[in-house]
Length: 59
Image (cartoon, rainbow, N blue to C red; front, top):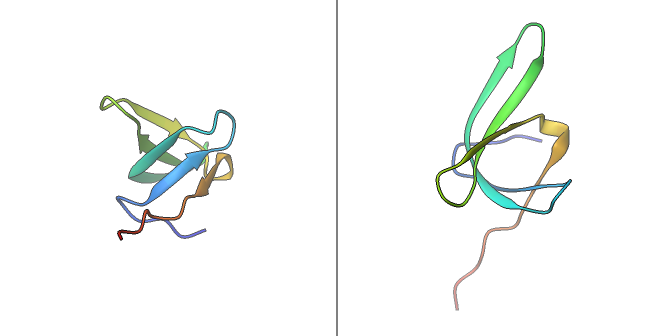
């Protein structure tokens, strides 16, 4: 899955929505994604733990 800053994603474990704030590749840990949740909280998750969520469409 290709991700970009600002993409809306859902964390599979608890179904929370957030937006991608950053993506990093670490030699030992592999890739991680920072997801900004409600209230400016950042969660760091592995890419396998998230799924893309369709953007809301206007009327």
